[in-house]
Image (cartoon, rainbow, N blue to C red):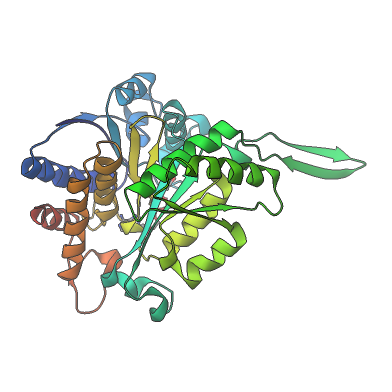
Amino acid sequence: MNLKIGVIKGDGIGPEIVTEAMKVLDKVGEVYGHTCEYEQLLMGGASIDVHGIPLTDETVETAKACDAVLMGSIGGDAKTSPWYKLEPSKRPEAGLLKIRKALNLFANLRPAVLYDELKGACPLKEEITEGGFDMMIMRELTGGLYFGERKTVEEDGVLKAYDSLTYNENEIRRIAKRGFDIAMKRRKKVTSVDKANVLDSSRLWRKVVEEVAEDYPEVTLEHMLVDNCAMQLVRDPKQFDVILTENMFGDILSDEASMVTGSIGMLASASLNETKFGLYEPSGGSAPDIAGKGIANPIATILSAAMMLRFSFDLDKEADAIEQAVSQVLKDGYRTIDIMSEGKKQIGTVEMGDLIAGYIK
Ligand code: NAD
């Protein structure tokens, strides 16, 4: 198979971590008989330096012509970087918002996996985390409270602010379908999270999710109120497979779930649209504090590349091979500085990429 992949290396540690992910993808190609054709795309500060803006329309068109996009991270140090002297619409982050909108990326996926080998970094008690956990938070990304109408008015000398939370059934249906499709590739359980005891938008959410579930008889569906879910994530995270939820609840719950896994350098993510197209990136930022030092953890980006193989190319075996290689390297005691603990072997970015690529079978 020929994989046409747009690559946004970005700023800070972006080029270092993406280079390692490409190394691993090339090794997968070699072992499983695929070719990776990369299209380099400029975004963020790297694009400002060349074009004066964080993302050109031509770059968007080139990205659209790819099967998927793999991204590092963009942005610099807001206090020292000249990019932040520009007006907000020309700063690096504006490129990110523009590409998400242009590509209609409505479904955000963030896996929260606790590897047994890294459980020391987890703030939960050992009896809760024994054996690790592995869940996928699926968050609606383009609707709800963050995109609803808002205003602040003064009534009788008192300031009053409004934010509206709106979803239509089509927006709910398309994310729910995605959630069930992804559950079919996993342990076949969906926990739909809402606040249906209070909110109309949640009652509609629940109704539509139930309708979609009828097309997926193999998947077990449960509903959970968001306040309970926040508790269950720290009380018994092992119970979750796919958590399906709206924009704001997902924003909060995905951060909570990632916190209990340990390092930011381990957290992959994907944003998908209605086709197979997706944008895959680590959850962390461009880490200007460690850029160029060769110490950044490339695992989140490598795991994002595995998600790309699974969700944009349906190459599950190849994605499994990457995930197993990451597990093996951790089992063998290799660590970048951010996940280092006593008795383990500290290595740099390039060595971590080499080792993971070397384990691809
Ligand atoms: P950050 O995630 O870049 O860094 C937070 C801390 O985590 C730092 O100490 C950093 O060294 C560490 N860290 C992050 N990724 C790491 C990795 N792979 N390996 C080891 N350590 C890692 O967050 P920040 O400092 O708040 O933001 C820095 C820049 O990144 C800002 O310009 C911000 O706007 C941008 N940012 C970009 C994205 C994106 O591209 N999607 C996301 C978040 C932040």
